[in-house]
Amino acid sequence: MHIVKKPARFFPDVCQRTYTLVLAGGRGTRLHDLTQARAKPATFFGGKYRIIDFTLSNCINSGFHRIGVLTQYNAFYLIAHIQRTWARYSGEHGEYVGILPAEQRKESDWYSGTANAVYQNLWLLERQPIDFVLILAGDHVYTMDYLPMMNQHDETGSDITISTMEVPLELGSLFGVVLTDEHNRITGFVEKPVDCTPYQSSPGKVRVSMGIYGFRLQALSQLLHEDAKNLDSQHDFGYDVLPKALAEGYVMHAHDFIDEDGLPGYWRDVGTIEAYYDSNMELLAPLPRLNLYNPVWPITSYQEQRAPGKLSRGVNGEPGTACDSLISAGSIISGAEVTRSVLSYDVCIAASSEVNHCILLPQVKIGKNCHINHAIVDEECEIPDGTVIGDDAELDAERFLVTDDGIVVVTKERLNRI
Image (cartoon, rainbow, N blue to C red; front, side, top):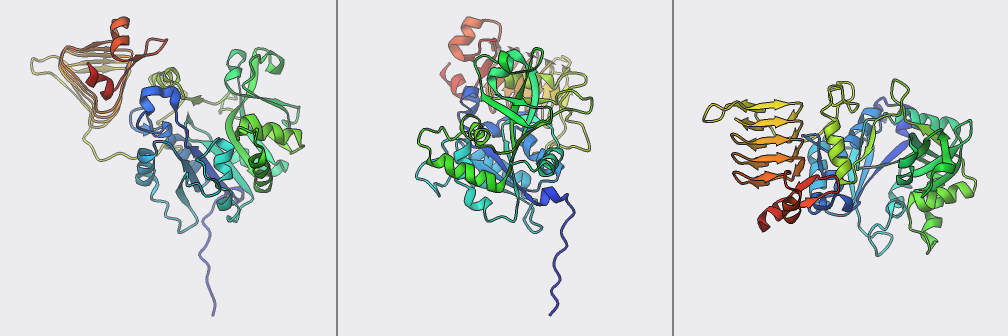
């Protein structure tokens, strides 16, 4: 009997030989109130997206269609979002976005670090017909084609390839700093050094890791098994696995993330309130570096069918206006004024209110005669008529979380205490 095999869908060879893991289990504690009930990767961004949509869209657009998402803390909304958005990949052609919750398969503990999270899922990787593992963070905002990096990884015969970019010297201590030779082979790696001056890649710049790693499966397995036995390890790629790999002579290369103009690509770790706020505000530039309107690199997300956004006059004829803002579907600005703000879906702003330099998450309701400035308002908050936020720092600090930069974070829980 002649058996006809299903034809393989066309993807570059390196894509077919790679399994992608997205680390999405962190607590996101630096986002404070915004991650009390949701995982950081599930946090809303840019009006209609979740943060994890950027990493997963990069995978699909790059041709890497076998993906496992590692979840842990506050994972309910994240898992529901992934199921709704990415269920189209059913696995018939070996393509899928699977959810890998912490299940204590290898150990009695939950994931205790980035390396430990992957270690606890080695059983899955070692059963795949693959040569490479692409490891990504699910809580960064950027658009990147991973194919050139993984092609380089294959062609150089590397055990490990790290995606890197140059940042100003004063920011280097926030990242893992990478040193390379003239052939981009990594000669040094220091995780979050206090003083980056000795590690400059060019005057006033250091080359840092983006937390994007390509591994040869055999090397990854060896390193993680060794790391699991080390009782002094933090089980973290940056602090433990990568320095050990370098010390033991594993072949490691850097891959520069640059845009079409030859400049460092747009990449943001939105792990703090300030970084989250600033990254949203950057979308309001006339030509933002993060292009949400690129038809050849779509950012996929889930959103229920909703009516178009609407600007209308209030009951007394006040015009509804919005300038330099993103207005998502289902939102209504009725006789109110919105300036330099990001409105998620189903936001309603009533007459004679002013919203300036704000991020309003889904289903926020703002009453009449409100003045909201420099704030992030969490989903489903209902702001009473006449409320003023962002004008009196002392009063705001009594009611809400306020950052050192003066960003006011408004949540339902804190509103209920007033």
